[in-house]
Image (cartoon, rainbow, N blue to C red; front, top):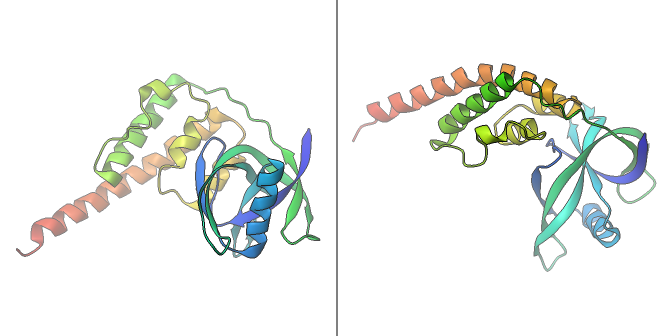
Length: 206
């Protein structure tokens, strides 16, 4: 078991390992936090925070690039998700929240090829309905990618509860199976929305 103490950044988002998260840093405590982690070259923890409380599982993030510095100290940064973790103990004595966390191992076995093919097909169909163009990021060659479920989930308008459940699921094969179920529910909803849009366009007066 690997534990470490890291700063926490509670947000209304779910970050996955291997995915990029752009952030606009404007609160004084988080400007200080980002300066500290950049100086130490250490990660910080992104964790889902909602009205009913903060999740106990999050994802560490590293600052990959500062896209813009503002005169008042605000900054736009690009971060990359690294490792899922579970919060063990919170530390509230500093300017920003910190926690002792346990880094969580992941079972990278990808599961049946049939599930991967169905998942990618569902993703391609959903992406086409959402954006009216095919995805250039994911195709059938990505079936063996151990982060495939994360890449797909982060590119679709899924509920935060669904995303958090995927982050807490520690096996890629299980995540893929859960996503197939969810995308089979999402796809007909997107088809219906597209049909309504097409009907509205036809009925729109010239």
